[in-house]
Amino acid sequence: QSALTQPASVSGSPGQSITISCTGTSSDVGGYNYVSWYQQHPGKAPKRMIYEVSNRPSGVSNRFSGSKSGNTASLTISGLQAEDEADYYCSSYTSSNTYVFGTGTKVTVL
Amino acid sequence: EVQLVESGGGLVQPGRSLRLSCTASGFTFGDYAMSWVRQAPGKGLELVGFIRSRTYGGTTEYAASVKGRFTISRDNSKSIAYLQMNNLKTEDTAVYFCTRVAAGGFDYWGQGTLVTVSS
Image (cartoon, rainbow over the protein chains, first blue to last red):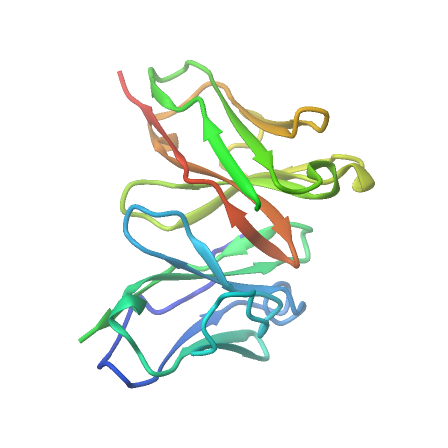
C-alpha cells in the first residue's frame, strides 16, 4: 500500500488561507468517505482535526475545513495563525481493509 | 476523558524482542478497534497494524514491513492493547503511538513510546 501523496511544504502569512492536498487512488481516497486529517506539533502526538472528509471533532477550530474531489482530498486552514505551524497528515481507509497515511506536509506561517 | 498510555519502550539489540503495552481508559475498550502507528526519527506516520473490536472478532491487520515479526493482541478485561515485536531491526527504531480507531481513522492518540534498536 503506497502512502498518499501530499506536498512537502506549504506556507502562508498570518490571516491568509492555505490548502493542503492529499492524493490517492480509487482504492482509498476516491473510494471511501473515510479521510481524516491530523495536526502534529514537534515532539507531540498527532491530533485529529477532520474526520470523514469534512467533519470537525468537538473543540477543533472552524478555521479548519476538509473536502474531497475524486481521488484527492484537501484540508483548508483559513485565517492562518502562528499556532497552526505544524506538520499535517491525511489518512484514508482502503479497499484492502486497512488504512494508509499521507506523506505529510510541513506548514510554515511566514 | 479518553486516555491512552503506552509503555514498554527502550533500547534493544537487533534480533531481540520487545513488548509494548497501551493502557486505555475513559471508554468501553472492547467496542473499539485499536492500532499502533510508528514514526521514525524525522519521518512520517506509518500504520504498524490494528486489531478489530470484539464485534468484528478481534482480527488483525499488519503492514507488510512488520508482518510475521509483530503481533497485536488485546485484553478487553484489562483495557490493554499489546504490540509484541520480535526479530527487531534497526529500521524499527521509532516512536510508537497507540491509537483508538473510529470514524474511519484514528481519533485518540497516546503520547508515544520510543523504541531504539541498536547494538
